[in-house]
Length: 239
Image (cartoon, rainbow, N blue to C red; front, side):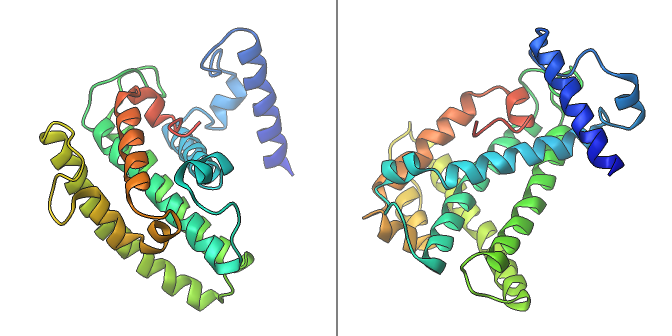
């Protein structure tokens, strides 16, 4: 189709730019791509959000991560979906947390070559969040979770509400630890370990406890805070 042709042609153009030594793979800009809106803020936000979601899905399904957390290499049907969802949701939370910070200003350049703006970060965050839940519902329908369209929609709405509640608990724990000099377990209700136990109990049980999972979340939160706002807004957090 014409759209697919344009996408393939654009990909070849950007790949050629990278080979020629353009690290950002965005210059020189091609007039036809500009005319088609390839470099518009909206298009960049969508592509950056897509890159972020691809990274989250890849990390959540990776064998090295399961080994690190002590999770079983394979689970059956709905149990496997639930484990992958719980891991993906944790990474989505960490991404949203970092994008919120990027929206506060400070850091390196972003899509247009200037300093990251709240609009850049907020746009990617919203687009990625919407895509995340669409992907979750789609995986429920085509995977082994064994649910129908109505069930998938209802479950996703409930899971989204739970996501926000969990995020509040994770934020409180991580912020309390940061204020307390990084001491694990700081904060209300058992700190990060307590928040994980309440919000992803099945994952904690599979991991043999919350300690290893909490250490991973802390380490990734520190890594993301050290990452440039430019890389964050470009969706490169989980590459």
